[in-house]
Length: 538
Picture 1: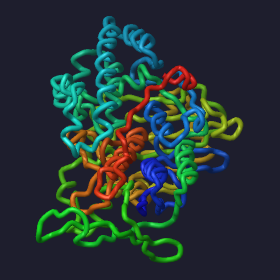
Picture 2: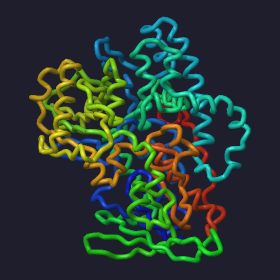
Picture 3: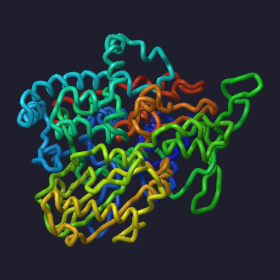
Picture 4: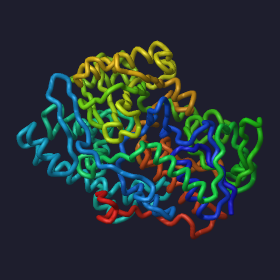
């Protein structure tokens, strides 16, 4: 049995803690916040429930695989609702489009907009499905530390295709097949889920279109907070101790224990963490530390310089992904003009991506995302009201400021929020939207940096550009400290709740291969495909 400290009570931290506790380890989760969830937290106010981050439930088989590993099922933990339509597209100077999941519905929509596009989309989705299966089965469950994990027939057969899809940008991949701007934006927008722009995302990520256009978009009734609450509940049932309001200030190590890197400089090994909580500073002894928080903060602020795998110079040329201004609105009256998810695309969205890169001011109007969960789940708002979550991608820079309640945030954040509310009212046909707001709370990049230690105040995690994807992304292991592993959106496989669940499994498997660990632990993770018995999930 090892003594394990998990840093961070978000999705990856809670998931990793449960996996390790079920293998017999003594596990404590420590988080500086007073609630579990991290980026996937919730805020409740005046009868409204707001998700603070993730709002798209995709890749259900990853959830099913994780829940099966810890002795339960998705159906037992979450009440999932299939969304129809999956989302609505409001395009500047163009008719709106309701996007419904399922191959037949998606191809019919594309054909209705652009003759011949339906057949081309069918071929596009065939390849997207094949790449998705390859990724889930072979690329998302490894930290690329062992070459033999990649030398498998299924990967080798697809190597020419995978190489092409890695080097060709998603934007070019889409433009070569479709002419209509709205269709291109539907297929290019998944790059934003990955923290980048279509011109920089490898076209391998067109696999995302299999998820929303074929596999379907779901919603956990009660909000995404139900996911993190289920993870916390399962952790505690496994014997994990969750300590909140307590920040890790240092990772303690010993010298001369573990594998030898050089004769003159033996590797360090974890011995514990220093923390600061309500009772003051103390030390928690540990044999293993799983850091499931922001990797940049760990490497540049917590670890001493000589033990850093990813020092400041490593981060200098890398992309933190977008920042965001989030606007949580409680609105009086119903909003039938909105679906659960609404994507608002400007005619020239390149200007918006340039603003996210910090190369120009944020345009007005901007491309924004709106979630109205109360359209599906009336329980997240008081009777006769709606709950809205508005996300405006911005440059990742804490200097933009912090948000606040009822307009009390920093001016730059509140100005962006004002413009977004006005744009939503105009585009969706809700001219009195601003007057009907009874609760308003904003969040800016400064909040992400202060509350989550997010690198440069980023909203998602490091962008999935070519040099930050797959084997080029930060790995789960420390090069200089035995017993220190990483999980979460900063590391492999990447950003998003399903990826964080997989990163927990990768961290567990990495530890299983370490000297002194039970050789039987951490068997390869096999992602089970949902069946008809899974409550209708495809």
